[in-house]
Image (cartoon, rainbow over all chains, first blue to last red; front, side, top):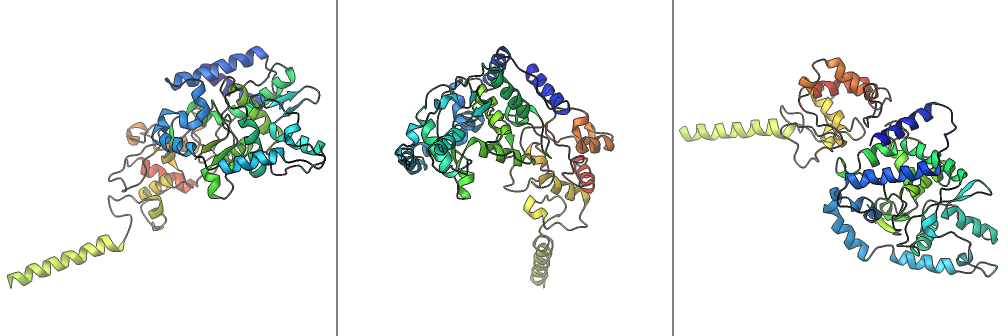
Amino acid sequence: MKRLLMISLAAGIAMTGASAVQAISEAEISKDIEEFQGFFLKRFPGLTLDDFQDGVNALPQYAARRANWEINMDFPQYEPEMEKAATEWSAPFANGKSLADCDLAPGNTYPVFDPASGDLRTIEGDINACLKANGEEIIKNVKRGKMARLVAHYKSQFNGERMAVDYSDPGAQDWYAQGRQIYWAKRGQLNFSCADCHVHNSGNSVRGDVLSAGLGHGVGFPVWRTKWQVAGKPWGTIHRRYGGCTKQVRAHPFKAQGEEYKALEFYESVMNTGIPLKVPSLRQ
Amino acid sequence: MHRLKTGLLAFAAAVSMILTVGVSPVAQAGEWPTDKECKKVAKDADSVIKGWCVAVNRRGGNCLACHQAMVSPWPEGFPTGGNIAPPLVAMKARYPNREDLRAHIWDPTVKNPNTSMPPFGKHKLISEQDIDNLVDWLLSI
């Protein structure tokens, strides 16, 4: 806890100081993972690391609503959409190839740092890069709909595989540092950091809602979400969710697939090291 | 004659009940409006009632998102507060100086930079008048 506080303080100082974020070594990141996971395992005794793959549904504070979620997960509403995605995945391009021929990393290793370009590869970015390389039109909306469905299809093939994002390259560590800063820095009119709600107050109630634990965030994404379904667009990627969260603290959301959310996704994915993938999922 | 007198009394009682309960839906003494009923609260209503309305309005202070507060009687079917922050009880004992409470709502980061409580005045989340009303309500519970 003390260290978590120190990280948040450091993030605060970094915010007010120069824009460059201090480099973080591989050993420090490993220690961060241990402390982050340790914090949640201590806060929610009785839960194993694997349990956190279910997001808020894993928490004892949410137990009353879990049964309903489980029933829905037996025959999830997204099933026809998953069949559609499987067809789309193998549908031939004009050159005869298909998305199945794309050179993608295993679903449990995203985001992947590319040392050649210094960029961080997300699965959404890789799908569009593959479409482009094959002379196909890219998918413009990277937050919902077809893209989310395709990512759900691809990642679901790695369900059960434990999250294993590589952070050994110094370039990757820079991305990590940026993501960690975004996670712990206060933002918006409400002055909340991600950690204010999802670390310090995880499992607590905001009126009738339970705040999810930061550990496990993203392991079930893309998700089919009731709130989004009401608006007619039930599928959403993790960057869509980040955007909603940023708006809720009354800040301007960053761009989906932009640098900030890619860095944040990297930080959260590294924190999830060892949690088995479970894609897609239903969320409220 | 006696029977007529009782009948008249009962009638008068019924009329007065309709007048007091039926006509004005909110802000009766000892009654706390829900956030929906708050929209109907008169502009010249008591500052304590207006302060409560700031506290329960999601677009206002939304205090109950994080704090429990005890008012009696609790509006029927109205959701209780969250458990992120300490319950709002014995405020007068905790804040003998009104200005301390007001300053804490205006910018709680002065006392604790890591607090989860938003700086309601500093970030203009609610008006200065809202804060005054809120303090009036808080010191009444």
